[in-house]
Image (cartoon, rainbow, N blue to C red):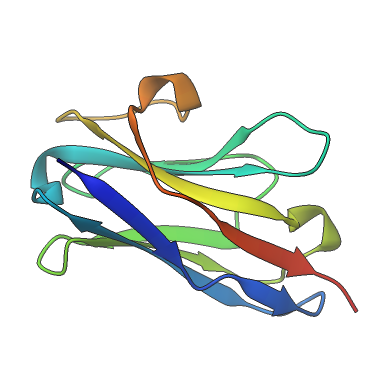
Length: 126
């Protein structure tokens, strides 16, 4: 059974950086696409960034393009989200999710992912 655990969240000032990690156990991530999603209080969950099983294709929300970078280390069974130039609007609970899928990904929707972590809080505030 695939289990995902997020880490790396916390409190950071505007303009700062954080790196989130999503560690998997139970199965190898080699055959799984991975996504990062976030949900702020009172808002719907939104896709932040997704990456294909090989890492060859990625997808980003317009609001984070140029600031966030998704990457994966299949040898470590871990996916990362590097977040730079953070803004207060980035404050949310961040979740990673996985779905067994090979090949190119063209979108990043939560309904495409069946395995979810418990989330990690990111707060951007001065």
